[in-house]
Image 1: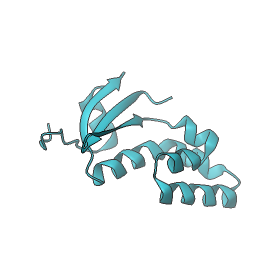
Image 2: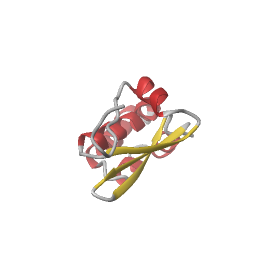
Image 3: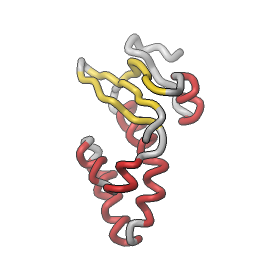
Image 4: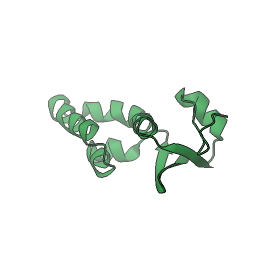
Amino acid sequence: MAHSTLLLEKNGVQKQCPVGFSWTTLFFGGFPALIRGHALVGLVQIILQVITFSVSAIVFAFIYNKMYISWRLENGFKFVEVSGSKSKSMIEESLGIKFKDNNGSAD
């Protein structure tokens, strides 16, 4: 289970983004990415799972949530809040990503 969840927003649309290990990716491969709208990465995951007999799912389980957060931020989503066991600054440090708030400033 992810240790924290980020709430990101763009044009009034809010998305919850889990942080940490992705159990859904481990058990369901690329399908969670497809459901989240991250189609290209989901298809790549499924193809790699077929080729590697699902070994790639273990690797993607460790990196997918960071990929999803980065993709949302690159597409204009802004940080709103964090819920869970870690603070915003701890998550920024562990991911190596600086979040911009809705007002456009990075703390």
